[in-house]
Image (cartoon, rainbow, N blue to C red; front, side):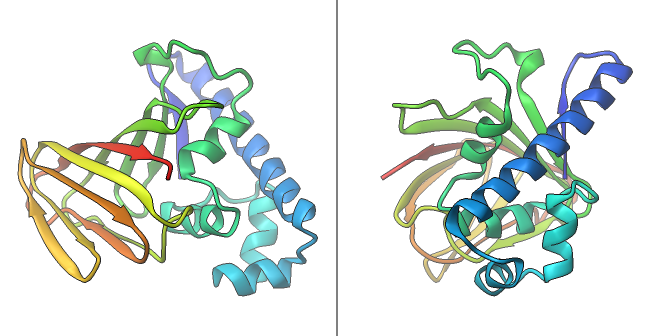
Length: 201
């Protein structure tokens, strides 16, 4: 998974990628140390191998959406909260060209942090794009009871949550509180673009 600042020169984008990866690796190591967990203990809690966790914390590899989701669940943070913690100075006004975009080439998932989390606020807005065939599963929410509203802007999105599978078309909105596993899939030959509104309980 990679993050970029849209609209920047290639050299600056590459520098941002390296800097973000390093800050994220450091933050993951800090969170584990603050809980007194060994790599083995974190591996048990996330079902991620010790070697993969070690490489993530040394910034030798960048996490996929699935791996980052498991780590966020272990540390009881949303993905946007974790990313906001490694941004140098999260601004009050986020210009379009400065909105952080995470790209998971393996999963076919682009995630733009439109309105990142901010201390004292409970909501955030994310734009997601799933390429055709993309299929991402999450073991559970980072925070139990997390409220989500999914508004499809273009294409078709299939969401499995709470034992039900929902097919959401352009203009449709699915809303729920997340307690268990979830799955996002792009079932059509065209990409799907959607807005995800997240509200902490």
